[in-house]
Length: 389
Ligand SMILES: Cc1cc2nc3c(=O)[nH]c(=O)nc-3n(C[C@H](O)[C@H](O)[C@H](O)COP(=O)(O)OP(=O)(O)OC[C@H]3O[C@@H](n4cnc5c(N)ncnc54)[C@H](O)[C@@H]3O)c2cc1C
Image (cartoon, rainbow, N blue to C red):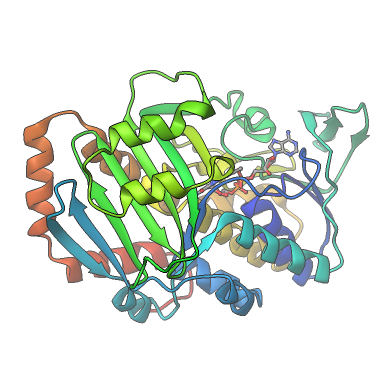
């Protein structure tokens, strides 16, 4: 069986590895000329670590990662709003959580794909997918070439997925009313003495720092914004320093010492949940199927989970693609929809402009039973996977 994957992001690469390890013949097409080093970082939560371990990649991921022990919430005046013990979550789910730069994760994924004997076909932009009467869709590349496969997996991301447009007729993501500046901070002097995720909350503003080591972290500064505006990199630092002036240390240091090359501004979009993820022999996965907001912490993890499920289902399939794709959607739709909607709710509490509501949110956080939160997270994130919690 020939399987062609559209997009060499986190989902496309992991799916290619999972399928290749089950003996399938896989090609991966990517529009960029080489591996993308853009982006800040990702926490691989235990559900993703389960898949990465199954695929034999967890040790290599660990070499590039930090092991966060806690997630602390802090108000913009420095007061403590509570903390979630990540080690307890790991223990409950039976797998570790790792903080890793996106470029390092991509490097590990690509090297494992190469070990499996597959090289990504870079510089191949898929322009459109065209249905035929036989039900075998043709892939049309921007360079004029066309191609076919038994299965086409659309892993072409959230912003303009060709595969999502083919399956759904529309691929427009939904702007969720806030901007994230994302960056990578690296210094010679250690400043993180605990590998703790720090989440600072203001009114309509948020700053998150995820350390990877004592000298390295990725971070995101978010602020509510009604409209998608212009990108003007030369003003990013000044804008951030104004917005997060007087916020607790080390926010100012981190902004000042992040190189402009490692700084990006993102108008944050997600997708409304879509019930159908396939048409003919095309299936969408990852952000193309279910892109949650970054407030979920699960975008990359869910793309990684898709890879494991599709490989398991294909290994045991009897030739009927329609029922296989339906089964995949049945397993994945409820979980990813819950994550998408939960992330919207959390984002609206962070980026709402109402001072009283923000104060109430902070009080709720202080009074939260974090052990109960851990139980809920472990139950939700392990669902559909053979993880006992
Ligand atoms: C550059 C970048 C930076 C990111 N940074 C972060 C981050 O800092 N933190 C975080 O949590 N999440 C980040 N994300 C999102 C997170 O990585 C996603 O939730 C997760 O990777 C989903 O995986 P995916 O494979 O579905 O999509 P993606 O990782 O977005 O991959 C989609 C791939 O498809 C390719 N593609 C798109 N259209 C076509 C086409 N027509 N033909 C061929 N190829 C195509 C894209 O170039 C891309 O490589 C980032 C994504 C990208 C692309």
